[in-house]
Length: 151
Image (cartoon, rainbow, N blue to C red; front, top):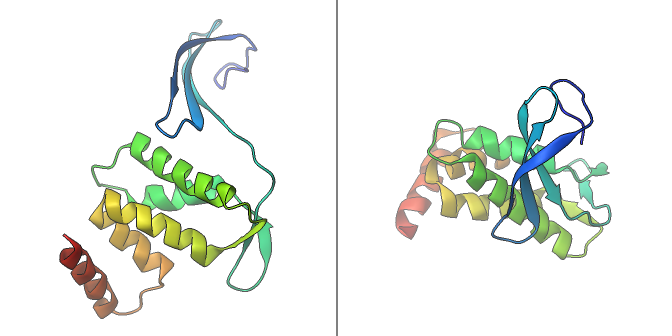
């Protein structure tokens, strides 16, 4: 694996860990030349899945987009990067295990919301506000009240 800092091709693995789902291996690496340290993730590669957008357009499923949305929702909360990675891995695994070649963005959003609701209420409300395209304060209040009832 090439070092992201100096480009040298030889690195060594310092630590490897399998996540709780058993679907991802996290490897901590060090460059032999510059001693720079970085993390890599090894995941199963399934066949291509396409996302059907609200306007009907299709694009290739992109884990990074889910990660980006969840990270934004979790900003300034106590949710760790490991928890975020696990949540995203769980969503990706759910999508891939479904065996469907296409999935609606709405379905992906529902999966993310289900998992965020269990993880962190603030992140859930933030994500819901974008996913459900909140326009009024009452929409926020409804989601917060729903969360309160469930606790």
